[in-house]
Image 1 (spheres, rainbow, N blue to C red):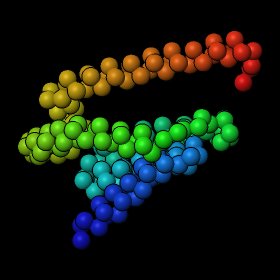
Image 2: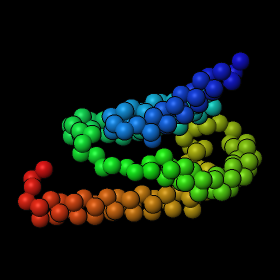
Image 3: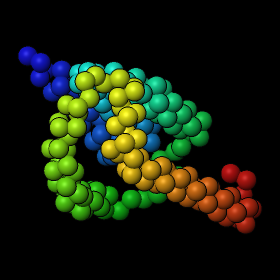
Image 4: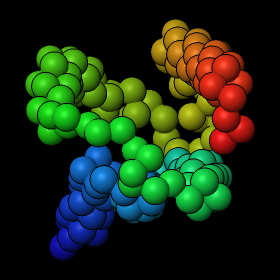
Length: 172
């Protein structure tokens, strides 16, 4: 009986992910992402991870996805302005196929997780912080570097787009 909420949330999370990837309209993709984030927060709650549940709701659903939706509504993107994506599903399938070895490695590492989690008696913020900054400090720092690189890349791309717009003479 306890598997019913998990199955319900997991299936809706998968549906939201498929909608986010397969939809041709940006607003539908953002709403699929919203459904996925909400279902993931529900999965955290079923795992009794209250901190992760609230962080998912506040950070992702409350801030990131809401910002994406507002930007999409503000820009009012028409389908004619979107690039023609040839072989979209073939590229997605190839990406999934290429990621399979990494998924197996991750699953092997996750098999060790119950031993780590059993050492923490409760899922408090303090316990999560102690594990994150002791056992997982390298992964935490690598994610920080990855986010910094993504931020710098976004700034470079935005400046490049602005220069191209100025060269073309359009103010769009």
